[in-house]
Structure formats: structure tokens, C-alpha cells
Length: 161
Image 1 (tube, rainbow, N blue to C red):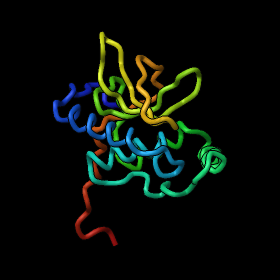
Image 2: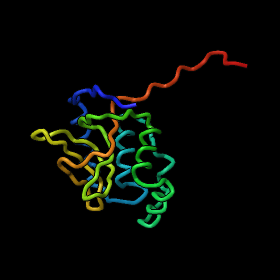
Image 3: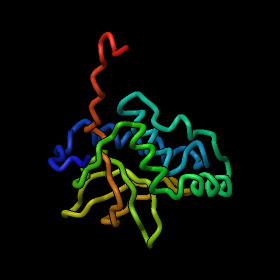
Image 4: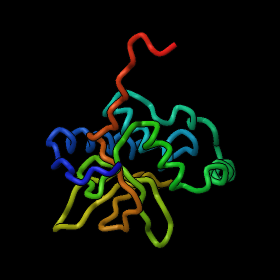
């Protein structure tokens, strides 16, 4: 399901995202604890209070172990898609400030967070080994709304026997 009528930027989102990215940039990069895919889960956790990647945290600690996890998930795109699914995030065709996704730079995918638009071009922040990297107008492979979530199915009362 893709949200086609994306909500406009919310003022509080930009403020909270700025604070989040400043904090991220001050911490050292660490595979399996603070990297590009877990930054997306950390952002969801900051906004919603639930961790969509608790199953992934600490599962790898080196670049080689990260590669094995990516191989197991058949690539970063499927890994990030699983994080989004675990979060209950809805896909969006028009990412706004705070939405997260998968972007491609030089043919290589990165998990990133949309930071808004400058002169009509989408800007994204990605976790890198040197901090937080800001990119203008990268190719967007997939994006999910930080605000739109998949509604939970109503609980059945009494259930069927």
C-alpha cells in the first residue's frame, strides 16, 4: 500500500529531526548498533516509541558480518523493507521531511531520511562512517511515511472456536 496523498511537512518534524541528526552526527559509527539501516529504526523509535529493528541490533559488528546479514536478507533494499514492515510504515510516492527510505548514490543503496526540499530538490541524510552525510536529489528507490502507519486489524472479541 502506497500513500499517494502525502501529508505536508509538519513543523515539529523538522525540529525533532534536526535534533536527532545532530545527536547522530556526534556519535561514532558502529556496525550493528549505529549504521545507515539502524538510523532509520532509531528515527522510528524516536518518533513512535517502538523499535522496528530490535531483531537486528547487535546481529553484526563488522563490515564482513554486515555483508553476511545483507546476503541473508538478499540485499539492503529487502532489509530496509523489513524494517519498514516491522514498523507498520506505509510506502509513499512523495516523501516529506522525516520520511525514510532507500536512496541510490553512484548505483549504491543507502538507508536515509528525507530532510525536506531545497529549490524543489529532495534532500536526504544518511549515516556514514564519517558521521551524517547530506545528499541533494538522489535517486529514491523506496520511501515510507514517518506519519502514516498501516492500521492494525481490529481484534476479534470472543474469537471463533
